Figure 1 (spheres, rainbow, N blue to C red):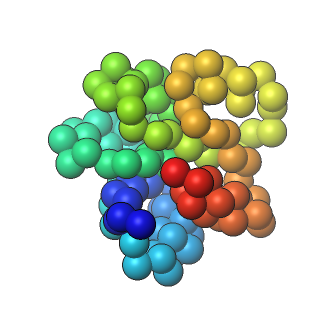
Figure 2 (tube, rainbow, N blue to C red):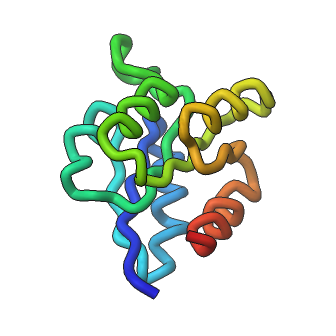
Length: 124
């Protein structure tokens, strides 16, 4: 098994810390986190294998792009990057929308979200 470079993109510092803390237990994961999608896009040249991307991503900077817009930008740049959308919304329409736009999975934030993310990462 080879190392995976993982970007975590969430405007909530607590969520970023929790996801990073959970995933950092695996020594094969190289993790970077970003508070905005724009910062993530600036660092795509580092060629992440997976991006964990918050669906509602623009509460810190009012004119920042939301998660769906960032997903579309990522896929324009490199369609092979796996993107896991992370959201507090349990709406099937939003989940379907992200999958249609190229997300690998849609995970709802909650107690089992980290285990779901880990399971998805292990399947890649």
